[in-house]
Image 1 (tube, rainbow, N blue to C red):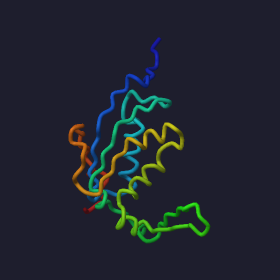
Image 2 (tube, helix red, strand yellow):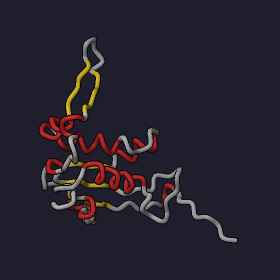
Image 3 (cartoon, rainbow, N blue to C red):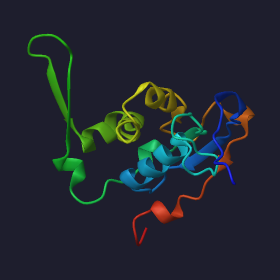
Length: 151
């Protein structure tokens, strides 16, 4: 009888994965990043153990929104004070803080649990090319399949 392998929290070896967001569609990149953060790309995936890798995303300012999402999609949040409702379109958010837009897209694809918050803390997003994680030797992933056709 073959037993199913179950990963244990102490034996998980985390690697660093690097994604370059230059010219990549936001949703496609966010879905791939969420998969790597959860560890679903490994054969050792176990649903109740955080088996995901660290993810480093650079060039978040060059991510692409397909269709009319830049003008039509609106993000809402509340400050907690009376009249504190705030709203911003995806295009404005991409201009002001592109890393925030990508973090929001990834966070909403992760589980809404304690483990989901732990997975989200392994995500590092930078607007430019420079990042302080060179010592971790991140493995660069090919983002060509996630680009818009013709670009």
